[in-house]
Image (tube, rainbow, N blue to C red):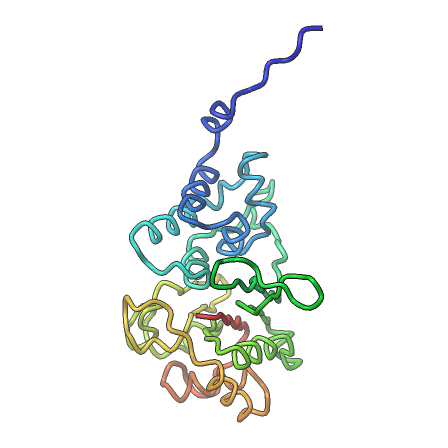
Length: 266
């Protein structure tokens, strides 16, 4: 029997779609497929399917924005790139042309392998590589906030215990925000992260951006943010709400219907 001819790697590479091509660009810039998945807020298995199943059309705009940011010498940390990508990710549509319901992860905690001065993994007493916290993320919707939003507190504790930084995205009624979307007085340096919702609410991202536009996402100090939460009786939503009112971002009594807390190690 005549053996089948193998297809060349070059042939497969030439057939790659735009999502796979852009992912290749990020890999050449030093990012892994797992990190690309984190940036897109998707499971890494989907990134692999860009190459194997021709998926990823809805992620092209986000990937292109991230590639341009990296090539322009902008922030390379996952949190900043994830925030950038979020503004370009469009919801997947079902066969009827309506927005598909996709359940995302409500809580994520990432660790990195500790390495020595030679770049080799540090091995612990148990014979396994030593891991150290690198980032955490948690989301809370209206119902979870009403019950105390317990999944948000561990993110704050992680940042405080590890010298991390914190930023958050808040969702509230559009008319509750005192400043127009994109004004420097509202959120300097993170102005891209404004998302309009069809139900009359709006999502805006905030961080302690004392450096102003172009400084990247300068997060709140984890320990200081924890102190703010402790002062609110451990209620992260109440602490965020008070900060927004005290800094003249929203009207007093504004109800928060969605909150995402992000923490990372600089």
